[in-house]
Length: 254
Ligand code: MN
Image (cartoon, rainbow, N blue to C red; front, side, top):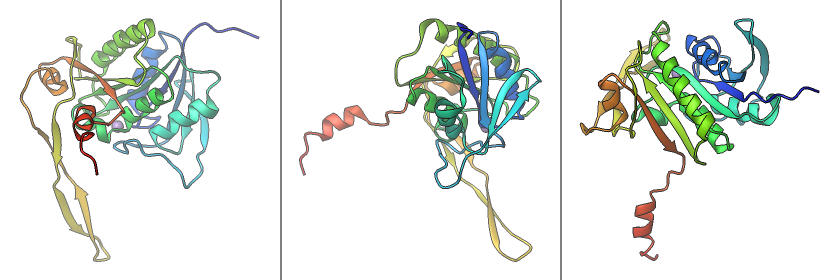
């Protein structure tokens, strides 16, 4: 029996196993330890923290670049991390990383993101977890700067660990890395615009074409850091309770 002291890093994403982003992240993760990939077998962007409860999950073995062991799952990013933890991994991971997503997961995007949810699921299961995204949506985006940022942040987390209940969310512009700034989530939202069309059977259908709206211009946010050319790094939490308001409301009895 061999003992393995190299850290085990679980890599997932929401763009699926064929994306350039997951390959870029696997390459960086492999510098730090043994890598196992458990990721969706198809595009799963913007599914948030959805899980599959009414159909079975299947995990198909594959090799990425003929080097890295992976399982392609017909489920969501959160499914992948749950299934990896419960069934698929050879041992407990030391770190869960998700990405590199093609497209920003700054501001309100955090809430819709499957990439971030894979990492959040890792946190819920008790593992230090980080989400990585490049703000450029293109499949051919230059991810080298984001890879450099991932290298620095993975090293930091493997050395120092992470607070329980906290996930790190990193966004980086395409191209070379200017630096990494700690940042809070920017106040933002989507203004939805639906384009209505008619199908060949004369039924209406709709394409969502929401526009991102920034609701603040203050410094210190993830969007602010990105606009200045830096990568943003935000500690996020899944406890959605507004603790201050709870304290205030608790004085009210019904
Ligand atoms: Mn995506």
